[in-house]
Length: 326
Image (cartoon, rainbow, N blue to C red):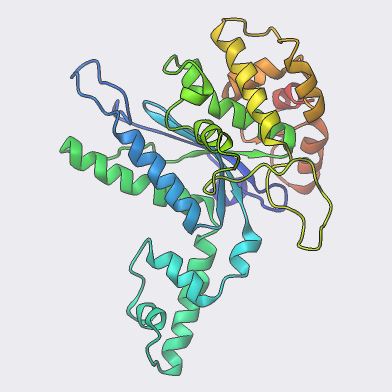
């Protein structure tokens, strides 16, 4: 029996999660339906635009994404500290960009004069909205529902477009985060719809490469901040503890190996990068090409899995993932 989402997401253990949504009824997000000959390629633009829009609204950062023919991948980082610093006006502004809210929240947002009891109701509503804006389930709901409605309208049908639940995996440490991100970014190459990471349309790695060519990182994606842990007076930098150049090189070299049908073989130039990132090169190709096949709800190195087990009172996590990321 599937566990409740509240039991799968534990921010005290990790803020990073891999989420996957798949279509039902042989529906397509993109590409061409070989039966009808109809092209759905334009739907990938719907998905990407919605993902990047929600990244600006929610207190949830997008680390990686890939939109495939009948499913999508996301690696998300939940920043629960950010939403706690939002004012009531900021919370309402963000929520109203998604939903109308209530009559009272609309009046409050406009700055209208309101009785005390109405302000109390607004504060209660804002507390609910604040919690939702840092909730992965709500993020996926706000992503999937509009796309489903738009696709059903285009298909002139009703009913489910997505499977009932999206799949989520907790990523416990840096090794599992980078392995999962690489797996997501290389999805189009493994599927044969792209030849290089920089030509993989509607993926986070393409957006990162385009920004890197201009000497910056995309504002809509969670940044790479290197391994700097020092507090420079402004607080420790927020981002992924890896250099962007290292990650792009890691993905590029791994993608070349995948394209040349050398799964299981490690390029000599790949090993130094993996050593700097603390990932065992013997297992990298297995992780980067078959991440979902070998992992389930919790992914991490052996020590991370042990810490997780000690902090939770739930079933023993997948042992295979411990060996892969050891």
